[in-house]
Image 1 (cartoon, rainbow, N blue to C red):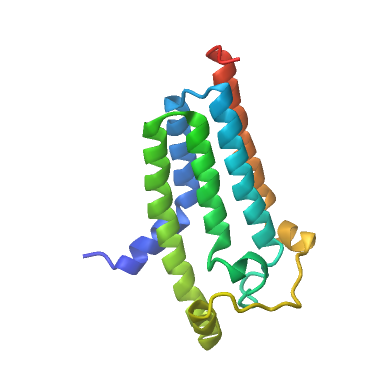
Image 2: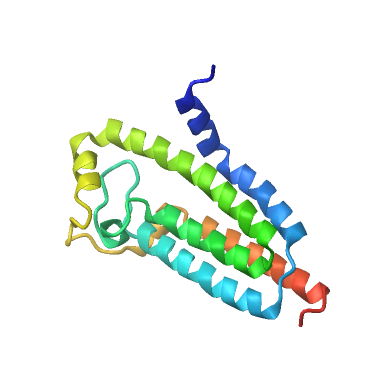
Length: 178
């Protein structure tokens, strides 16, 4: 029998290539319209805004971040990704795509969170346990920095969802939705 932690680590590690495969499937199934692209795009933009805000507060593997959106969510980058996924599902205007997105996100982000939390507990011990048990506690001196957004390579997520939105727009244009 396989070790469950190894399965979770594998799922967390392959979530990006698996996401591309799910993205292609979602695009093939999608029937976007002008309205669905507008609403879904706005939802996805909110998710990316949350990710940028989080990335601007985060210094990975150096500290437990407690400022910005980390006061509200233990994993704001994943919350942002989930919102982006919801936006892209709305933009696709297909229930099958929404189910695919929900399944993909629940499996891969769930695995990523569990493996990440184990790593953070091992690295930071009591500091991370305290953070998890005291939501809302914040380092008020920590401010948003655009340099952290770049260092955390948040531009990759932005390019990804904008690319997906453009592909959906092209499909809608090709199908005469405009």
